[in-house]
Image (tube, rainbow, N blue to C red):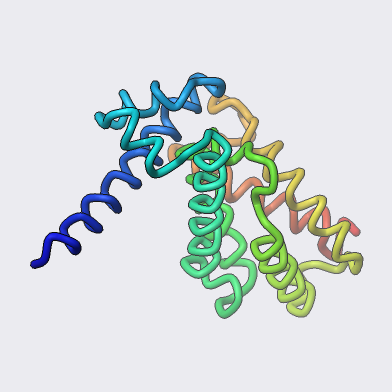
Length: 188
């Protein structure tokens, strides 16, 4: 192994440590300085500043990382290949997991990005083709879907609507049932 490869691996590990620390620190204190992130990552301020010269660069990296996770969630759910209703529920589970684990990044402007929103539109089109969604306006369907994701996410864990032992699963089931009820044959 060459020194260059070891340095690149170290740099990648440091970047991952910085992003993990930033997510945790900024979730609790959104205005925290980069120095606080460096302390939480167990790195020097110089190391953090070498990788992220500005707070804006760090926030951009957090947003990009979340976007990658959203794209992976679509893949994991089989959103473009599997049975649409089951894919919607699996996708909702992954999204609720992301919302819990990445509280700060979820609130960043521009997330989810246009590619993720296009994939959501494609899944809603598949649901429409299967007859589970009858509402025809894509923009309306997307808006209802995104608003409902937020409302279900904001429900307290003790909410009677959740009533399940597995909170993420209960949220996904409630979201799916409500969305398809609102946009489906009986609701639109």
